[in-house]
Length: 91
Image 1 (tube, rainbow, N blue to C red):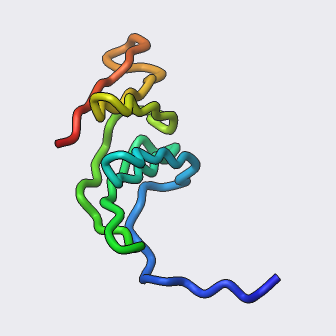
Image 2: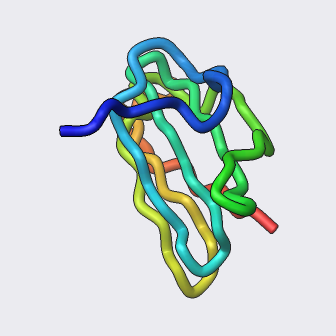
């Protein structure tokens, strides 16, 4: 295998990032972490541009994207003491 070289500087994520979701039609990448922090990036000319980073909820390390709406769905283990799905929409 050839040596792999980074194409850009490291990006700030949540602790223990373990899920990637790609919205190819909108050129967006979502990185979710065990810590509940989610980072959203625009993919521009092969590089990632940070758009948003924040706490979505406890254990928000699973994400589904609806390609027709751009909605992001995060099943949460416990939100206010109850399991929940947080829905977020990106422009």
